[in-house]
Image 1 (cartoon, rainbow, N blue to C red):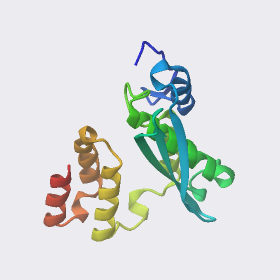
Image 2: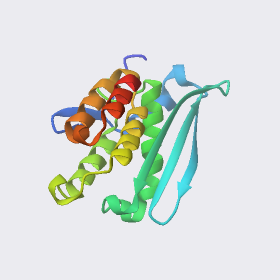
Image 3: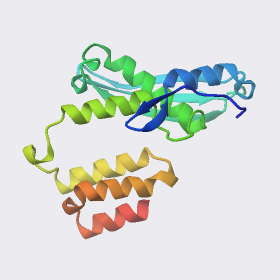
Length: 179
């Protein structure tokens, strides 16, 4: 990518590129001429949605995809705009996987901000029961699948530090093998 300068947002000491900056780069840089952004609503109900974004090159070949899930109850903004936020996150992730605006992270400023708000609204670990072994394992796999291969080791470390005691030895071995 040329010497494009992304505007970033500082969140807890780390710079993140906003989705709009990734879209501007796709639309303005010559190497992305003719590329398209296509969004598909995979799930929608009154409480949550899932969107997949597909990026195609000028020849119509899929060059990147990203998915996002949002819950209506996860933040004040999502109470009225969970579908829009989901779509924006999916676009940001797809553009990130394409390599646009990933100097420090695939996650966009919008995603990180939303994740922090979700964490702040969730009761502490001591006030809610630990997830079941199978539930935690399936969530861990889904979380790791959403990461690039080079980030999965750090993702697994984070999972193990928080939920490691929930997994059986067989599940830990499977997670390590997946990474």
